[in-house]
Length: 325
Image (tube, rainbow, N blue to C red; front, top):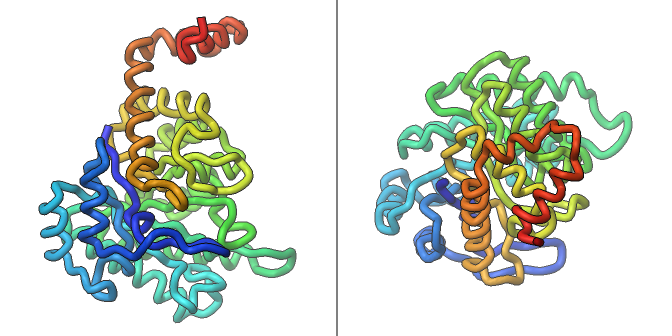
């Protein structure tokens, strides 16, 4: 398995009340990644970490990647940070605002193609609503089709992955669940759109992550994975296994069963904790789970499914997974 992380978490971050850590240059962020065991990739943010507005060209990014022996797992295009995106970028009633969001997607795909990565991921968190009778849902859905359809058509060799989330910054995001996202992709009808499945977003949406991964795999569309954890009430971006360990083990079982060998990217917020230790947990724990599953054997675990006797399956989990003998 390959591990990367979203580098924006390595600099200064904020919540409603506090500021965490200190600002860092991209070079300093990459140096931090290089010091975390197991990590070989980075997901960088366009246009705020890389690109003309950030003052980091493709050549400069490649030079820094080479310096630390890192690859790019994805270019993350931010379509929520501009002031005019406050009430939505992709679904804004203002055509000029929608146009700017779409242009960001196209520019991010250009940047990705030039750096040699075939993935751009986009999480349209500003696109949603708060109240009944606030918005025309069909019109908003049409804007989503137009934006992601136009984005997919540009640089078609670069896959555009849509990251869904139930809420934040809107009370309800239009693309709240994996099913919503797959319906949109099916409606657009192209094969170079995919889904970014964030484990914590899946939990927050009241999905069961292993089941959702199975649906995505069966859909035939490309998918890309973010890892983290939360308590099912909010997207806390905790480290993996901290709140839903057994669900995460099951999720990794299906990751292995489906032969996923791409990047597992940490979307984890260190806040008060040592960031290298926090991100280190994600790779270390996942590798331990993989080793456990391989020791037990995927076939042996698969034999426990649909056997009509879940108590015996639970005993297997007690004894072989948790080691409680």
